[in-house]
Length: 432
Image (cartoon, rainbow, N blue to C red; front, side, top):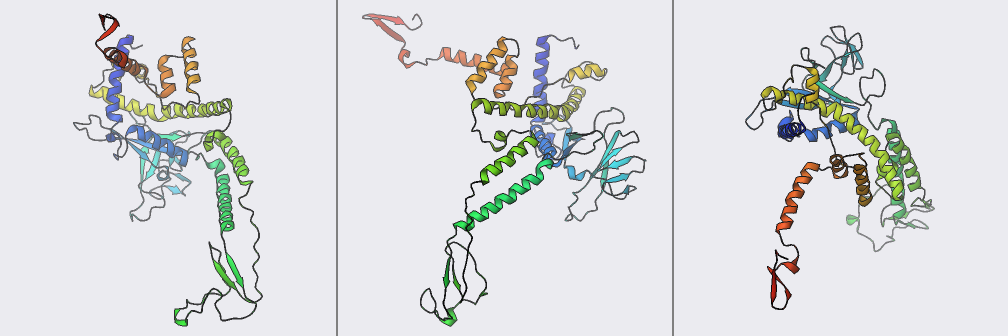
């Protein structure tokens, strides 16, 4: 579509990657200058898992000699997106109605057709009372009126039609996790109590003598404590009064059923989160086939979330950056602003993350070799999937290494310039 040869396309991609990394690997890409773009990917995704959704705002900063791009992205905590109170908005914090007639659900403004219009972001958190400032909201339109490009990215895993806000990943299993915590704390306390060695001394009648040694003068005695208070502790000694007797139930700890019970609950949690039990606990005790099947099943979900994050978060930000790069003339892309179809072709990109783990590297490499031989994959794809490397970079580095190995003498047995093959005759190393 763009009328480029393969060599021209490779050269253009290499130039764009260099320009993009100039911006993405700098903390100036962050509006608050805390993280670079790659770190922000993890923060946005983690916030979506914990809170149900995360928000990213496009901002414009100042261009400097060391940062020619003005694009800045600002990550917003999901708690700050809420329905405004007052200022022309009626209703509670769940549902309200704006002055323009649109409805607001948990900070998300929609029109009469149910289409997304804007987001309302507070200047503080709901529980932040220490700042002393009045809580106010800023209305940010979801899309630009002229360009139609997004002003804010709402990262949310939609599960139902007309869903406006996300659901935390641990919401289905939060009660089970709480019960596991309580059960673990109870078992830990029982094990600690059973390990304590506490002595109780019982007296037959009233006595003023100290059963543990000589009498202590009154002025040196400790204050009298509650006679009905008995404490257990490592090496503790308690004196019982007349007709008092201690009976302690045997806790029978450690509990042999603790580990199977917790593992059973982890199986349930893993199924709800689409994470295999072995990977959830990072405990691989099964066979190679079973462990590999568990990892492959988990990577189905990981790849799906990776592709979804790249599509919803990385790609829109890349398109905004590329538009600025073309406008500044740092990247040449004819027809970028003239035809949406051509612009889409220029914006095509592939996003690759860390490679999956390998249980048996030899078998994994042999399988990759077979896929390449049968035309099911490419060397570039296998390099990414195997160890996350770049195939072309590997080839260039191998050329350098091979040339260095040929010019160097690596075998000490032939390190001499000449080698004697017969008495009285020497053969030059190059001739050999």
